[in-house]
Image (cartoon, rainbow, N blue to C red; front, side, top):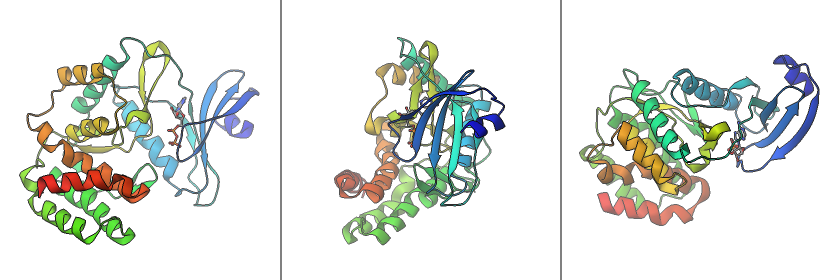
Length: 285
Ligand code: ADP
């Protein structure tokens, strides 16, 4: 660790190093030298570019100057089986009265200002540990169908989590999903994996985003996921809506956007997510 920190220009001694709990994928550490504090993640059983994608996503969001992310100092890109580190800025602080409001305002600014002529992203990314195939598309509907729902359907068929009955409903849904998902919503840069565990609080109660899986798409897709597992204060929604109102049809399509994440969880963790998936499939077919 000392040698790694030296490489990024910190020649002072390590004073403290302790594990941080809470991550479900990597080992995480707090490291303090005489001059700085770091958050370090370590993993060997992930693809070579796993930390690179995370670092690039954070850097992409950071460059928008809209919402804070931890500064990345270094990452490794070495083969599966070899030890990889991601070294970034340590973030710590207490929530203030303004935290939820700022999170809503700054996420809205990210969605409003960072845009692209097309939907999607170049090259695959990761949602958690799962590889997310990506490409650029001229319309969001086709991207959502081909790069989000269909790949999860295929994974589920192979794994056996998608039963015959689910498959029939699913295929029916894919045929009629154009009635619901917009083709040309405004293009926003999305964090892409924004559940309650992927934002943290820094000094002065300032919100930070972590662990992104960036993609250009419909901002309603992002907000739908924030609502799936909770962890966002009501101030967040109030201020988000103030700065970037959701479309009138949001409530109608929210379950269809949550479906992607539910399928991902069904394929990862199994049948405990089955009933929620079935509920949505039945509603729209
Ligand atoms: P994983 O990638 O394994 O899911 P996380 O990125 O979620 O790991 O981080 C694990 C824990 O460390 C979480 O509880 C998170 O709140 C905390 N954490 C993440 N990034 C930082 C950071 N830059 N500074 C301080 N704590 C962090």
